[in-house]
Image (cartoon, rainbow, N blue to C red):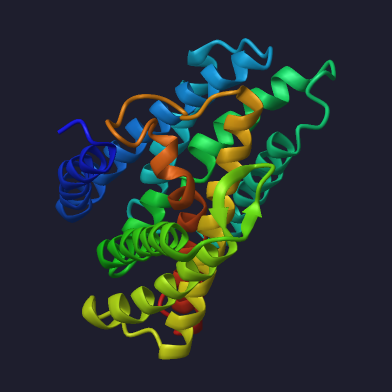
Length: 278
């Protein structure tokens, strides 16, 4: 029972059904789970930031992160806000994540407050899109689609990398990841996207589902590398210990949080194209 792979499998067998149940029960329960995830993620990030000298009070980042998710839930009732309103938040979240990963200016006088804002937007800004995605037409199915394709990409990358991976992808950030595994992840995401689109009855065109799958595969791996870089800067192996066999919550969310934005804007574009939103 102590075998790491077995522990990982058992954790997934418990966690995945709970996650899918929250998605299926309704937007309130799903948003509540996302808000809790934002709180935990912000705590993990704040604790890592302390290891490079930025002692940020945890409530200073966890409360705003949760508030962003709560705000998204409120905005999604009764209708989803125009994408332009959320786009600014998404762009700012990406910019501050890039600043965090680049390790530039951490010793600046404003380094600490920028880190605090980056944590808030990483934990809450990206997940802000989760309640919005759940609230659109067929939002339940789109969230399940996102989870299935992201997990398929991660799983394919892991097993392909373990079996035939030889060429390091970015050894300075994550020595265990390989180019072969990355390609396997992209293929896994593309195949899973086509299959999930059909099984869930989402009716996206095949070429759209294929492109979306590839985007999920690329962005998910970028999210994984970004979190690995943050952990390396903090000098830790895992972001936390909350999930047995997996580490911290961010170790599971790193691919999902960025892909949440990708899928949300794809779905919004689809809705706008078909004139169903306005």
